[in-house]
Amino acid sequence: MFAGWPEEALEFFEGLEADNSKSYWQAHKATYEEAVLAPMQALLADLHPGWGDGRIMRPYRDIRFSKDKSPYKTFIAAMVGPGYVSLNSRTFGCGSGIWEVGPEMLERYRAAVDAPASGEALVSVVAGLRSGGLDITAHEALKSAPKGYAKDHPRIEFLRMKGIAAWQEWPVGAWLGTPEPAARVAGFLRAAAPLTGWLREHVGTHE
Image (cartoon, rainbow, N blue to C red):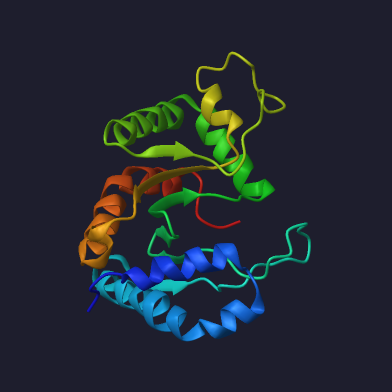
């Protein structure tokens, strides 16, 4: 049963931020497994009945095409149902939506934003999410309208975005060492459900 993350989890990430090296990782691997990884596994197990399978992401960075050659992620992240959760030394966050999209999905997304009925439905969904305290973001956004769309399009904000996701995060604190994170994830996923539903209906979840 999920009981929260201990203070050692945050201390682990603080140390990793200061010394992102194999020697640090090996010296503190037991702390990672017990104080960071095990609570995330417990969180996903608690959320499974209501939200489905979870999957914890690897702690290793893909440095093949990056100028930054630090080998380890300074956070732990996982997918759970339609959402994403992450923890670092400063914040705990949840996301849901489509983040990095390929050409076909991006084309479907823009077509759905452009169409009056589905586009206005998205405007309504986003307004509701924002009024509930969720942020709306994208992995990347154009500075102007994408090719083929007018710069004064009534939904230009969303056409410029390459995908769309809801996001909410909280500063770490004593609450992190309690079962409260599970409640916050479930509350976020319920709040983000209208966006998840819109994407499923109009864009799909796979290329």
